[in-house]
Image (tube, rainbow, N blue to C red; front, side, top):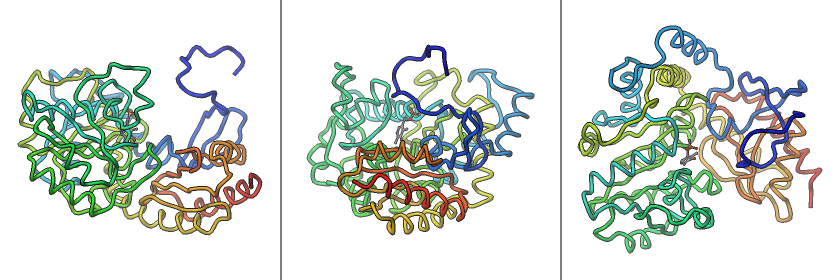
Length: 387
Ligand SMILES: *Cc1c(COP(=O)(O)O)cnc(C)c1O
């Protein structure tokens, strides 16, 4: 692009301009083709320009876009019912919003209202990521990200990841909730252990504290189950989600057990756009298609193939993750950012989730051939960048 950009400098200089996508493929403004193994940061779980989602958007745009939350609309009710069933609860209620951070804001406000005055602290883990609004930034356990924006809203506390004793020590009578990701996504793709999640559940029960799970990145099939917590046979009290719910259309949701959700009364929380019919029609199409193809099973199967292939690559020291949320830890001396850029030039989109690890999160319906093709590209790129 020749003219100067009028966008704020919140993102690093962008090397490529994408103009079109279809399934796992993207094309740039020079006509170059790419394999998208990032899915817009785990958003386009069904691939680009999915026909069922496109048709739903087209039909809804010609039917009803917006009437405000002073009135009910139909797709939102259906999406909430499906989510409640997929969470496997049948007793929950949903609040719709427009992003992951907003879903977590809703959870934090709900925890405060549910806890009552003086019982408002949310405990989360170091290395976590929960969003960029002031509250969710404070919930995010990365102190270096806090510094430029101090003072942040009061009421957040961080503990070491995967350390139940640290969590137990952090829970005093001021604590309303614990907020954890089933797999720390932005923190480097660090899966929780089953022992940890079960111990957290038991601890929260013992202390009368809510267990809130941030499924913004892990939710909706990505890890090989509908939700990441379902790997551990625990039931959280609150579940937040967003990224994959609209396959690229902005929508977030905060689910809570009905008796917890009951803390919200009319007027306690609201949004102009959240839950409007265009977004919920997209989500309904996404969930219908995900159920039709059994997206969690697709992710589990494709994830096993991709992880196995990555483990066999020269230059990859370790592979971690769940389903199709995967990090490839590179051998000492590699610079993951440089490898990411080389991969892009070779036609493969991934990202450097840490300075030394690549994140791969292809669409859940990625084919075996596409996996093999991507791994072959990565093999060449790693050979070319060998330290
Ligand atoms: C991306 C992400 C968020 C923030 O979502 P936004 O839509 O960018 O506000 C929150 N939590 C987790 C786990 C995420 O991966």
